[in-house]
Length: 102
Image 1 (cartoon, rainbow, N blue to C red):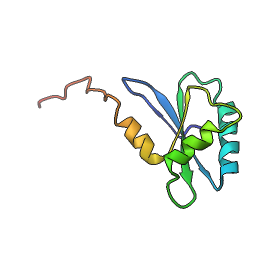
Image 2: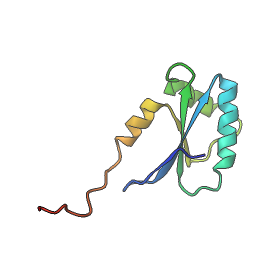
Image 3: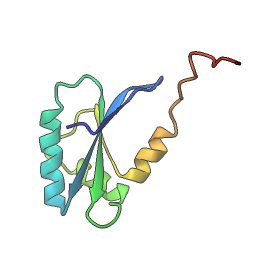
């Protein structure tokens, strides 16, 4: 299930957070989530949270690269630091209505 959805001027996307204990769990979870979200029309960020500390993005990328079932382009798997960095590259909405001066 998506934990939250982000509306953005550049691109809307959903985020699903998951925790895993080992690389086998990681692969199984990614496969399961890819099946669950296959019909979604927007980008899905799978946020990988390690058991005790942040799992390095380089290891995540290596695990994804070595998957038998390749991820579709609408999926991105990231750790929290990478997600923050990626989000910082987006535009922000401006306030559509000016507040009253009263």
